[in-house]
Image (tube, rainbow, N blue to C red; front, side, top):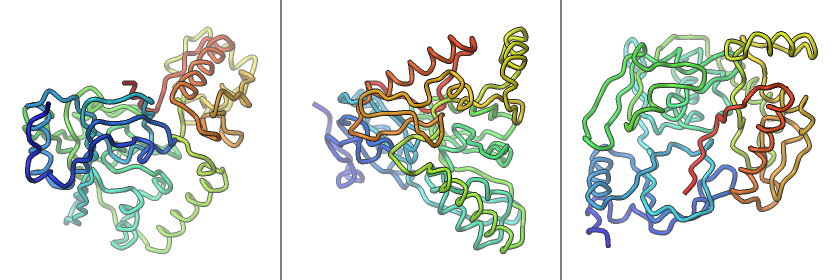
Length: 319
């Protein structure tokens, strides 16, 4: 039996919360506790309470790329929803829970350029930094000045400057830390409002035309493959036989899936999206196991065809 919920969280913590409510794939079981946190004092109180009661903790942003299992999670899921955007003289200070869509509205308001490529990504700024989100040959890590985190166990704050963040393709040091991204300091560059608006509109239009929002999904499932991670003999054979499109020094995971002849595969209620081969969609009351089975089949078939092991870009929470 857990101890008394702190007063500051009394009306915020939900019990036996259905994860389907927050899953972009509309898949998930039940979390014993769920809470949305917007203030630091709430977060610290929640972490102390969870620690005192030996509760496992899962931290999420908008959960747009998380696959939850259909089981019962006995701990607490903490959704970071702090929402500050401060325009400084030389940089932007943005809360981790700030939605990317809202962030772009602020960029338009203050004529801040070079973030337009984020348009249509349904996550938070904190989640984007955590996974070094990218699109159109850009990555959020390029724009980071420093990141403020809170340690889950010691509750101490820490600052990571860009060089400390170990940003790489869809990677950062934060994936290896038991710390919560709380605030991000981002580069600021003034631009022309009309140009910023047009670019955002163009990126959004492209995502809509690609039908990325047609069904519940988690976006791209697998990372593209950097050429540097493919053995020379295998790479030479692939180029010789298939002449793959290479963009930004990477081979598209979607292209590999298409050429492995599994682009129309269905299992249970999930299928490989007909409009994007690196997206799995929930088209008919899919389960976690449906999703996981299709992921494993794709990885197996691509490896058999190319001797390349695909790596998930999404986060899988199996409990």
